[in-house]
Length: 116
Image (cartoon, rainbow, N blue to C red; front, side, top):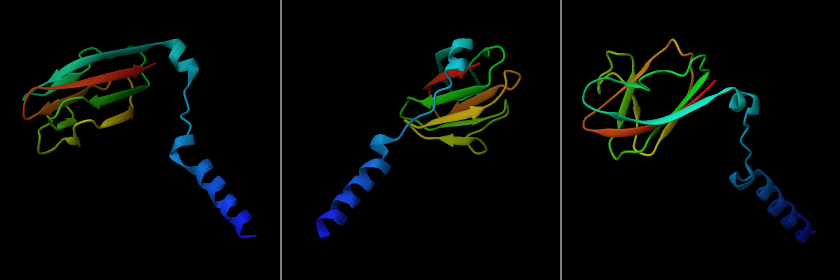
């Protein structure tokens, strides 16, 4: 009986652990268009990306620098923006008519992936 419980617990752990987590990928979106690139964010508000993918539905921004960056509108500051720490990423469902800006205390690189 103890062996059955132990095996059940182990199997239960394996199937709910992150190792077996699945990520949903919308293949239709990928066929319709993607755009990726790198932008250097500095001490003044910088558009991410400089030109949005037309009919964009989503953007993923990854901070690949060692500095924190802050996201927001064209008036974003390091005091008012959404903080994205080094090596963190964020996914935002946003149309192409919205421009996301980043600012940092120093020169910082971000990568982005836009999906139509």
